[in-house]
Image 1 (spheres, helix red, strand yellow):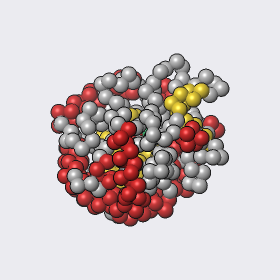
Image 2 (cartoon, rainbow, N blue to C red; image 1 turned 135 degrees about the vertical axis):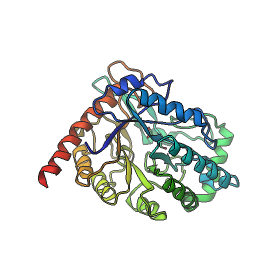
Image 3 (cartoon, rainbow, N blue to C red; image 1 turned 90 degrees about the horizontal axis):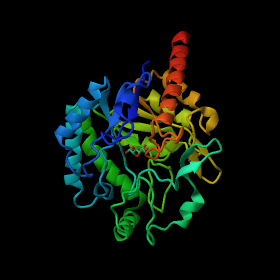
Image 4 (cartoon, protein in one colour; image 1 turned 30 degrees about the horizontal axis):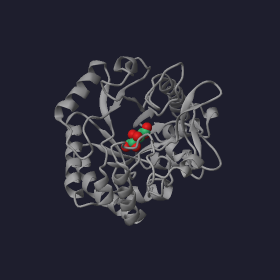
Length: 353
Ligand code: DNO
């Protein structure tokens, strides 16, 4: 198959071992990162060497990083931003030295993916991550401690309040300006060392706690891609994140950006949306959620997509008590399903030639 199937691995501490990942049919690459270094610091070369070695020993490639996190100071354009951007560039160079071809990152203020429930039960006895608008509306991070996944627990309430106020001061256009400056510095570095930067969309793709969100829809993605018009400035197209907003036509967007050669990495998962913007993550199968997986994969196959693909979050099933979203079983089922869809779609496209 043309697409490159991969699986996220959180390193030696991950209960999902590389041995198990290597047994999933068609598995090619491991998606990982140096997770024990804080944002804004240089990754030790020994850590990258160890990661590569561990993957290669199991016959897997280590060529996708998720993520090199962007420090808040860069997103806010604080006085330290230039120095930290230089550190970021050094991490890109180091990753490239160890065989990395694609680096995922995001430009979401303060919180990465935001959910209100990490284990919402479904009628079949499985559990999944969910987001409920009403519950979110009841939380006020400025007045109380809120526990949300992806949210750096090292912020005190006062620090969090300050950050939220700082983003309020720069606003949406300030965030865009800082993204622009960041991309104009890092993309030439990535391009020179053969790395494609893949920005992850905002998850969910609308403001949370009043913080600006900019990688949310087609208009904004067009704007982001135009800042530096290069394949090194590409997308990590996450169907489940963008798919939380019913106004995003996911297969059409995949078709457009795959045709333009601007998707470096696909995160494929399904969500079941509710009318008010709440959602629950569902099994990958089209009929389990709101997204049509066949149309998504078909759009990729029609455009000869040969980039990276990973099954994204899975539900907790079969008694597994996984790291939220990142157990073995449901993600492996997702991988098997994606293998089937890609094999069928790629063959259909070939037969039609
Ligand atoms: C969640 C992930 C995100 C993603 C980052 C990329 O499961 O998809 O945390 O890794 O947003 O920087």
